[in-house]
Amino acid sequence: MTPAAPMQTPHALPSYLNPDHLGPWGDYLQQVDRVTPYLGPLSRWVETLKRPKRILIVDVPIELDNGSMAHFEGYRVQHNTSRGPGKGGVRFHPEVTLSEVMALSAWMSVKNAAVNLPFGGAKGGIRVDPKTLSRGELERLTRRYTSEIGVIIGPTKDIPAPDVNTNAQIMAWMMDTYSMNQGATHTAVVTGKPIALGGSLGRQEATGRGVFTVGCLAAQHIGLAIPGARIAVQGFGNVGGIAAQLFTQAGAVLVAVQDHEGSLYQPAGLDAQALWQHVQTHGSVAGLEGAETVARETFWDTPCDVMIPAAMEQQITAENAHRIQARLVIEGANGPTTPAADDILRERNILVVPDVIANAGGVTVSYFEWVQDFSSFFWSEDDVNARLVRIMTEAFEGIWQVAQAHQVSLRTATFITACTRILQARELRGLYP
Ligand code: NAD
Image 1 (tube, protein in one colour):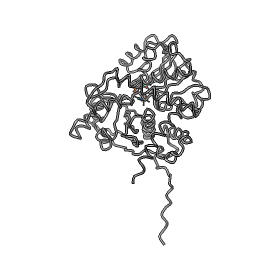
Image 2 (spheres, protein in one colour):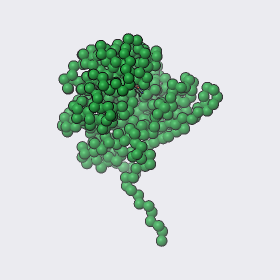
Image 3 (tube, rainbow, N blue to C red):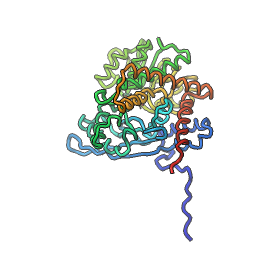
Image 4 (cartoon, rainbow, N blue to C red):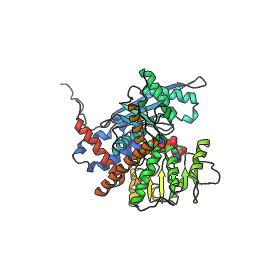
């Protein structure tokens, strides 16, 4: 008698989704569970959201300047492509993990659908501290990584962009490497490029501008005036640094900042422009003259009206959510608040504008850049900014209505809007074969 074939459990999770080691991916799965009851008949497709479509892990070997060899681990994850090509940044960080990149790719699917861009979600990363590499080593690393993931990226397949520790120069190297391998210049394979190579005006500031735009709308809804509002910002890079400057230009007072090296507190207000210049020169907010340096942990106790986490995931947790004094949290970073912390903030009547809408300004202008590259027709900065504000405002106000209608958090409302769009597309396309 032939032994029976092992039973196939219909929803058995692949091993890399081991629930004991989920990290930010675990946070994302809980967020999906929270939205499922609101998806109606589409919930039969919800399993699609709980596993990435495609995961690529690559070895990235380079020769260092001293002649030795080094190997780095790289990832590209395409979470969902039901609504269009994958889209999402590339992160260079010594602690990048597959779980983190999976979560970031899934949040890109949700974000792109939330603002109704014709993209799916993807994300990439290399486990490396780029600060330890020379410029030449960084270029070789970027080019080899691009070649390795070249089999799955492309202007109509998956379009990378900058994220933590990557920038316009790195996008230029990625674009060049992909183009050399293809034998033709494909500017639309990445966004966040230098303007001289098909980048868009306004792209660099777009995420911070989007954070500012939806932050002002949320503040208006809860009767908080931005002029005079005290803001605290964690992460003073592309997102936090730009958002802080826009808020202070609108009359807010920057009372605290924290980055990987330092934490500053100044109740009378820090000069955001001067701090930006200081960071460009010294690489950190630490050491700014005239500002009081405080212990890392006290950042969460800052007396403030608005808190903007704009650094990394899992910063606001069940341990520190009780201490936050703000009325409004605007998530510049991806995944900064754990689901347990979300519940605490909601109980305490602190409004959270979630990452999947708050920081969608960057990918919105990335979409504009991609459209401009394909049409070879470039827009003025005023056009870019006006279209950005229009898209962000419409998306935010729509999500606000959904939150009111269902009496749910803005995060669940954004997931309702986005997951409905993704799963409608999934259902209309049907399952192949
Ligand atoms: P960045 O590299 O320009 O800046 C990161 C900032 O975070 C730096 O100030 C760094 O010192 C700080 N930081 C890093 N680790 C920290 C820690 N442990 N504690 C405190 N501060 C720390 O990166 P960015 O582009 O500004 O990205 C920040 C966040 O925003 C990330 O979560 C990223 O995924 C998200 N995001 C970025 C964009 C974009 O367009 N750049 C778009 C959407 C979302």
